[in-house]
Amino acid sequence: MSDLEGLTRRLLIQNKTDEEILKRLVQEYMDFKDIDKELAYTFANAILTECKRSDISKVSEPFIKDLLGINKANVTVGKQGVGCRGVGDFFVHKLITELSETKKQPFLSPTSLDDAGAVKLSDEHILNGTNDILIVSKMEGIHSRLSDFPFVCGFHVTRACLRDLYVKGAEPISIMIDIHLADDADVGKLFDFMAGVSTVAELSKVPITAGSTLRIGGDMVIGNRLVGGISAVGVAQNKLLARRNIQVGDKILMTEGAGGGTITTTAIYSGNHNVVNETMNIKFLEACNVLLKKDYLNEIRAMCDVTNGGLRGDLYEINYEAKSGVTIYEQSVRELVNPVVLELLEKVGVDYLGVSLDALLIYCSDTISEQIISDLASKNIKCSEIGYVDNSNQVNMIYEGEEKKSILPKFRESAYTKIKQEIGEETPELKLEMEIKIEKAATEALKKRQKIIDHIRKQSFLNA
Image (cartoon, rainbow, N blue to C red; front, side, top):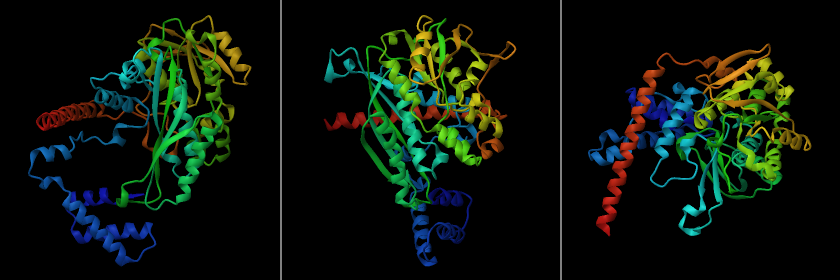
């Protein structure tokens, strides 16, 4: 995929001549499209013209310049590890949650760093007095490396989205789709993605209700990339299984895990394509369906899925919200990982504790742990106790031989592809300096938001 607008702006910053820029753009067109050079030049000239005309450095009105400009952190997304499910990503997402805060507070907000968010219907004017109904919502982005494999891409992102509703104790009632394809993507790619999405919809009996299909960057991006996400809405009654409910002394159970999008990506890009089949199931959703119908649901404090940064990263985030610690038995966890998947991870040198396993974590009282394990076993779903909640504020792992270690998430999740291994998982030397710059950019964005709010409210008052 080639971002022609981004490339042109970059070349303009580098003070390249118009001739040099046009030559480069024409080459990009010739690489991606079956068009003659004259037409490629016409397109390239149009792009260069638009980029010059949209340059806000020439804007004289301060308000417009501020509105259209960006308070840059001068730290790239890749350098900070955003989306890489490690400490760098967690840091940025905590700042994003602050930007999501408004005076209208939800029942479960992004600041909780939980799997999904929720509003209580009694808080809305339309249904006053309905105290026990919660609307739970989730947005899940697709796995970017599965762009060339749209069916499994659609399958895994939809399953992951529904997962996050189920773990909050909500029954999914609606699936929505936001899919973007670059200009040269075959239309069949869209249909294959939709087939993957609707496979999960059919198996889970949750209808698809709405969606959006767009091109990435309109005419400014060429190539065949596919990006986007799935959102879903669910309904919960009486109680939300939120991380903040976790108590010291709770047992931690985990179901078997064979992975989803991440394991599929690892399998494909390491040439172990057959392992993809291990991920094609809905056992996680089935396990949640079993538990949500049980009388002992009130004794389940919280449920979570092992995704972001793997078990190591999830436990760290859960501890942060629950204000507690955990002690985990590593051997118990290992025995719950699909053996074919575990063999793959060991073969390609990936730490299984740092990648998504599509396993269900259940925090519950000691009195029902054995019943949960038994009930899931009756549905052919393997589940075991892997540890307990303590007041250490740490993730303590007990390894074979009773060796106990405190573990922390790395700057990025386990490097599960060759390119990720080349980039590495380690913390950058300038981590603190980067964080200061990023925090400043977030603060400036908040100031900008308030400035625009004040501006619009003033106009509204005058118009009234």
